[in-house]
Amino acid sequence: MKILVPVKRVVDYNVKVRVKADNSGVDLANVKMALNPFCEIAVEEAVRLKEKGIASEIVVVSVGPAAAQEQLRTALALGADRAVLIESADELGSLAVAKLLKALVDKEQPQLVILGKQAIDSDNNQTGQMLAALSGFAQGTFASRLEIADERATVTREIDGGLQTVSLALPAIVTTDLRLNEPRYASLPNIMKAKKKPLETVTPDALGVSTASTVKILKVEAPAARSAGIKVGSVAELVEKLKNEAKVI
Amino acid sequence: MAILVIAEHDNAVLAAATLNTVAAAQQIGGDIHVLVAGQGCGAVAEAAAKVAGVAKVLVADHAAYAHQLPENLAPLMAELGKTYSHVLAAATTNGKNVLPRVAALLDVDQISEIVKVLAPDTFQRPIYAGNAIATVQSTAAVKVLTVRGTGFDAVAGEGGSASIEPIASVTDAGISRFVGEEIAKSERPELTAAKIIVSGGRGMQNGDNFQLLYSVADKLGAAVGASRAAVDAGFVPNDMQVGQTGKIVAPQLYIAVGISGAIQHLAGMKDSKVIVAINKDEEAPIFQVADYGLVGDLFEAVPELERAL
Image (cartoon, rainbow over all chains, first blue to last red; front, side, top):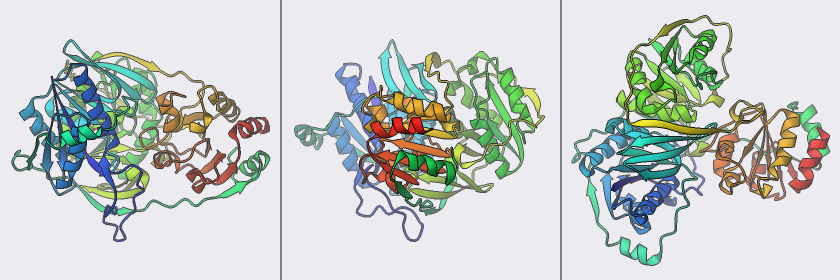
């Protein structure tokens, strides 16, 4: 079974981003970039399925700038077999990304597509669901457990009240939540080996996909700052303040 | 033009999040219709018809919709949605699951987790874990939006008298089926609806110690939450997680116990009215957002707090 794993290059999760002075976006110059944490979990899950003998090939794909090759190499070092970069200098919306991925799904015919549930930059949480709609596949979002058997995927999903389990016909889309697995670190030999694995670059035009968007970002601002309050010396003082000053209890 | 609001429910009860979504729809302006899709969901439809500001309730009652499977629901919602100016759902796990699928079927972009309506086509939403707020404008024929509940005060659940209209069309895509669910049962209020929340982090050391927080919560009528660190460590289940990828909350009072204040946790609670932090590390970032900080050992402070209430 072939697994497709779309991944995104994003700002490292430890970086606290700052809004640009002209409000055109956030300042990403000289900021550490990384594989989106949820995408890392997606790669790990695919690799584990290959180690179990369920998957035969893992193809990673990223839609992004040329520099996203770095994140594709990371995914290859974690165990993916080959990579495709759909190169786009523009920051694309989730629908455009889903359309590009749909074109790749048509070409590669994977039985399973595993994606992160959201990217920690745009926080959209849309791409997997949109790709499922465009491909006509079933979807198991926010997965904390995945099992493949008898041509079906059984997915346990993290939902607001607890957990839900669904059974999906393959091919299917799965999006990862935090508890699905703990990604491994790439070993040095694997990092070296990854440099030799195939990485193909294509353009949206070559895939015949229009990336036009119906959404425009007008401006990006810093959120209203919350100022630090006071330190209280004792529990008694805390309770007194909550009762008489804040009046919340 | 009219606005279609997707009702959040469990076939028995209309979830409170729907009232915040209707509030967002009111700010956009236009007739508000609510879609209740489920099975045996008549009581939900009746409740939705009473919600202030709702003009019409559409009910799709069929086995295919019983468990909110997106493969079956999205075609129904897209078919109905194309005659509306806006389709809105709460940014709950249900809304997040189904709505992007609807948007893709309508061939429009979705705008996720709006917190403010500036104009019928212009909205604000947090990005980068709430470290930036984007103002976005949509030119889509149908604007598909999920609504973050904490950004909109709920409309009244009573006082309306909308008409109820059944929808006959049914889609059963036949590619997914519901197997089961484990829903946590609790006497305490739901995290996203609670006025007071007591949350624990890695400093709690284990799951048993959360009993300390439950005791305080029960005296305050509060819900109990947790940081990602506490959930990842297996202290408590995932449905208690507050943060960028967990639940977004904005109660009157948030008491953070043994929580350092990672960016992704702050993203889920920094809009709370009053924040209290109890932590032994006085350098913990949580103190930078806390109105009242108490530096000390939580295993002494929390029992003392319980006795003082």
